[in-house]
Each structure stands twice: as C-alpha cells, then as structure tokens.
Picture 1 (cartoon, rainbow over the protein chains, first blue to last red):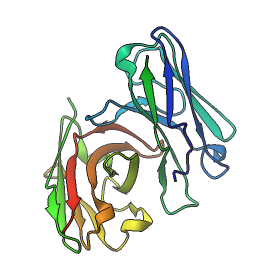
Picture 2: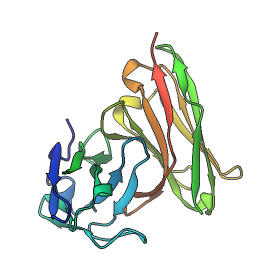
Picture 3: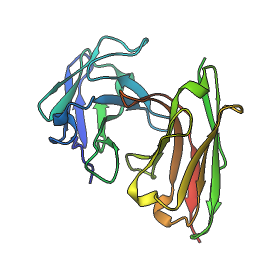
Picture 4: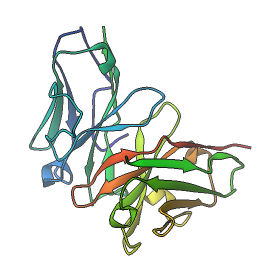
Length: 112
Length: 119
C-alpha cells in the first residue's frame, strides 16, 4: 500500500465542495516536505494541480486549493464541475523509505 | 511550449531488456532534473528514478536498483531509461517528467509509453 493514504473515492454534485485528504507521517509531510497534487483524467497523463503545499500553476482555477497540517494535507475543490471528474494524487518526499518520492494511492472523484 | 515525448515501449519477455527515450523541447533541458514515473494498469503513480541536470545525482526506487539505469544527453535534449531483467510487475505506462528539485514536484509530463512484460 501507499505511504501516503488517500480515500479511494469521493463524490459530489455540481456546484458542491469536496475535499480529499492525504495522510502521511513524521518522515514525510510531518517532516516539512512539500505536498503536491496532480489531476489525472482517465487515459491521459497526470497534470500538476497544486505545488509546494498551496500554490496553483498558471491556468489552474482558484476553485482548487490545498493545505497542510501536521502529518496530513488536503485538497479542496469548490464549485464542482463535470470536468473535474478525474483521479487525484498527492505526492511528497520521504528519505526513510525505499522510495524517496512518494505518491498517495489516488482518489477517484465522481461528479454526480 | 514545453513538450516531453516518450518512446521505446513495447512487449518484452520476462528477463528481457528495453530502453525508453524521452525527447524534450521548449525549455532549457540541461538546467533541470528529470524523472521517470510509472503507472501499472489500473493502479496509481509510482516514482522510478530521477537524475540531476549534470547527471551527478541519480536515485532509484529500491525495486529497480541494479536493473534500471537512468541517463541523459543534454546535447540531444533526451532522457533515457535502460531496463534490464524485466519482470511482470514492471508492466506499466512509463512517464517522463520535468522535476523541480528542492521542491520535489513534477511540472510537465509526457504522454507516456507502455511497457508490457509477458511471455
């Protein structure tokens, strides 16, 4: 299983707000390593959504935001739209394991 | 604009070898760390390896150490992944991505190339 734990799925109706959690430990998120988020529409490559905990690349709407606290992080999406339906992955860094770069297992967002 | 295009994937038997390539354009390739990330069918993302801008820093995940070799040619703006002793669990789409080292995130990704290890 993944070092970063995400819920397998979340869902929401158009216009609603959803959050996706990402739980780590004291050797990754809790150690102060940045958390980044990626969006992957099925059949396409992942796309950077949030970097360095809470920064959006140009072109990413401000409906997407993120935060970190302790050993966890969360991604929030407000004003849910149909084309937000995708898989979302958190990612961080951890030097105590067999893999320095770590990803969460991914969360499938369904827009009802 | 930044473009990353992978090639070299295909079907290979267990124990076989394959070399993936990633051609970069639209940015100063020699100034960036680069990485390979894979995704097994129906599964999540898994980091494989990254290489520093001058090839002086190289890291691998444990499961590929001794079998995979990452390299780059800055003059050709290309990244490579040589894979030996391939196993069924190496079957995945392999993505190359540009890495912002220090902040450890991946801001541009290629479209991926599928590697299938099967007899």
